[in-house]
Image 1 (cartoon, rainbow, N blue to C red):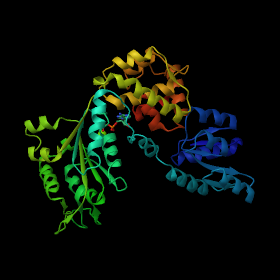
Image 2: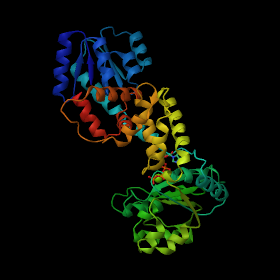
Image 3: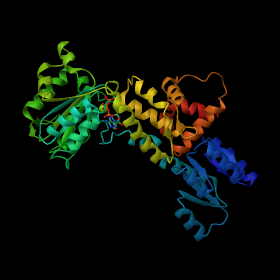
Image 4: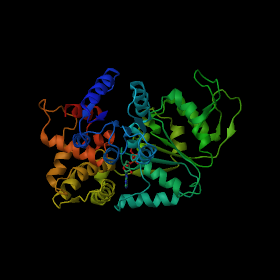
Length: 420
Ligand SMILES: Nc1ncnc2c1ncn2[C@@H]1O[C@H](COP(=O)(O)OP(=O)(O)OP(=O)(O)O)[C@@H](O)[C@H]1O
Ligand SMILES: [Mg+2]
């Protein structure tokens, strides 16, 4: 936390007290000093200087401490967005309980960071293979037919799945994605089919399965190739019968869901290797959409790059543009992470561009940056400090977002920040 207090004895007493209570305290004697600190690092809790702190770091919880405890100051503080207000003279226990509540009320910035990872339902690309995709998509969307979407990571499988749903008669009903790869197979069954109270240890209430909550809508079975053989059979039964029986239930019921499945592994090959049931493959593979890797449609690269550039310029209030020298570098890269990789690269370059231009050497550096390598020496280079500050400013202090833009892991960013 950042503590701002001009009275040296109050400042020292509070700092010592709060440190003993386990807070990490940085103290500032003046607003100027505090603003400098705020510009270089976001603080989860700030004691004092209300408006400026909020402006620089909108997510922080501000606790106001003042000698003038009048109705007006309290009202003004609350209107200015203060989390709480402590009048002087105060007692230390009161401060402590206010701060504990402030910390607890803090949003972990992960929640905000995940949001914009949701694929948007907008497809950019006008290359021949993409036009083929659009044709199939528009023909199949209005039907109830099962669709299998295949393609490498980051090619837009989830975008396509959402577009199919949005262009179907089910558009107003739920779209339920299930990441079959990240849910343990033991949990996948209750996740999809639901479970009655007491069906397994820890099931302390009925749990509605996603296949039921998607009733009359669409369920998106993502990474379907990761489902283990035992559960493949259960999924096959469901696709044949369109009935669910929650764990612990003795009756099954009909549900009306459309199934869209996606895989970044080649299911056909998995069937040949006997790792995926052939009968399930046939049930899923009614209509197949194969998303081409980005390197197979180089004509779309700059279209996408400009689309993302616009998006991030708007988001971060920047005016970055591509220098012509960047184009051949972007177009000739192999893009193993496909559109997602291009998107993240453009986000980073938009924020980090030094003279509002993205040049060939910037792209080169970003593409070949050893992103998580340890710094060569103990001290961080000025350049790196400046970059980190710029990114944190653009993300309003959101460290998860900043780490992603910088292309480093969050814990690496924390390490660097504490060094700074
Ligand atoms: N054609 C496109 N136009 C605009 N954005 C796209 C396009 N294709 C993908 N994206 C964007 O790229 C990112 C990755 O897309 P998506 O999540 O659909 O990929 P995926 O194929 O499901 O990848 P994975 O196999 O890793 O799950 C998303 O942010 C998405 O919005
Ligand atoms: Mg996906």
